[in-house]
Image 1: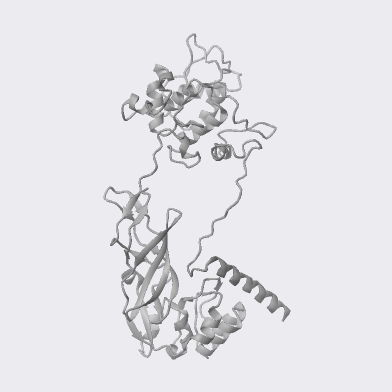
Image 2: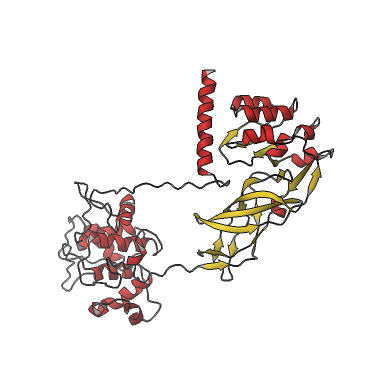
Length: 456
């Protein structure tokens, strides 16, 4: 008895958590909020922290033995060559490397310098020297990336460079490369995006930022966008009201509910939604949350939210009214229930449906908030499922009274806080009519209001 009470207490705790996080009656998408810790002991809160940590995790950059990164320290040309080699290990050779007079074959960065020169990222100075210990200015680092990655400006160079207040300070040799890198959103200016400061020595944080943007094609959200030169916020596309969106239900072939029943359901978009330019607006498989509820003598799905590219958006859309009604006295009703998800009201009235047949439900849906999922085996008596799962006295009473000696064989029973009381007391088990929903045919959604999304 003590073991039962302990287990039941834990189950009650699960229900309480479910009720707290899902009080709106739809599944809640938890977001874990926690302080972001840094890989280094001196980059916590630094503007480029996320970028630095990402590059460190990919072994593109590293810190010092004392655990610091020293984001404000300068970077030598040899160090930059080493970073570039790690960031772009598959860069193609464009020329034979130079043998620089000031870089001996036993110098720590010899191979990195040879590679950076071979792949077009870095060149030497007159006199066949590389100057490996010289700190690299910002403009040299930007031009090196533009050259090695073979960037080419798509618009007038001076038009692009006019975004910088100090464009006049950009050396002539660098204007092409800086403009091209700016268009690719590789140029990062902290703290003022309009101040390029081309001849200032590049800090380790600067170089990290350039590499983050260059290795991600300018799209990775590791640098605050207010510091990215040439950045423009993604355009927002409005999907107009009246748009129809195909839907599928991943858990069963049919959904069966009582005409007066309301249950929360998660659906998935069945196909991609694209605009006239072919841009992806809603990918196939995007979750749609809402509920099936009574409407005009039948049932209707009413959506409340959709998750598009990991962002949950309000989603005002409805299906048509489903009026496919089946009488539970129909001798073929067992076939209707096969591979179906059924509402709790129907489950409570299942004794009037089963006859001598075994009704197989993939999922029993409840009108309460989802609290826990109890996995079960096909073909097991309902009484055994209830006893072994210890779902609770109320739901146990409801199911046992409903099924009698018959067998209900759910693959998954989903129950929620308060579901036992609903099934055990408030529902009339004499269910004579059910609404049969074919998700692929019946749950196509029509937008009631426009939906704004960022195209991919």
